[in-house]
Length: 293
Image 1 (tube, rainbow, N blue to C red):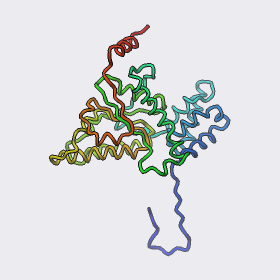
Image 2: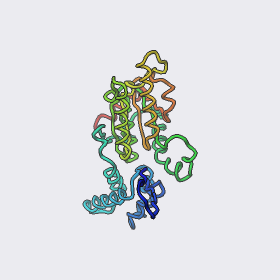
Image 3: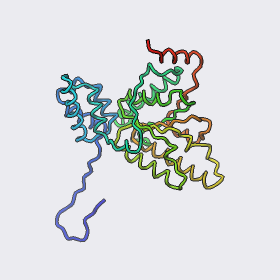
Image 4: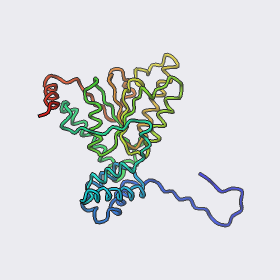
């Protein structure tokens, strides 16, 4: 914090903070800028205020962009216009460090046991409800950890981990960015943490879901330190989990090798969803879903 020094002055200097608006303020800003259109978007505004951490000027510009899209279509402002505009006015620079995935799938496309489907739906409900619970109800004041939602997707290749992430992103109306951890991990000490820091720094204003694939390249049964490589691997893992917890958004770790992940680390994640190899009846459903009519 800058302080004036070295001068004689007869006027007081006041320091004022202008933080990102909290959930209730963001909802009020959406309502204010939408004006008469706000009454038709009540449920949409709850989701927008909760899922997009935007400033007042970003919300103002997003509403203007949504009205542009509605005018080009020749109709009223719809919830989809507002979500698309909110994504557009979030920071786009994350695309430099990660690959943006356009969600193509819905709940009808994924074939999983009922328990796994229920868990994915619970994750969506958690993301939607956390602003009300943490800020509106004040629960967040008593929690030491951040307000982010962290999860692990584990299962053999092709069992639906990326599809599950796409469905969550589509259901929430958020951008999805995929980071291949095997390209982030470096053999040079400290470089992995620098690479991760760059990603999370850009993600802070992106309002996006971060999907870290190939987590087994970083995770492993490394809790028993035998040499310096194991010690620095533990540091890298701890750093990743710390940044995930501090990130005010949704992060997903995906791995093909759940057995190789040390439980001491995975216990720090809020959700763990297993994507099993499909049994015969599920394989039949997949075949039927893939063939056109």
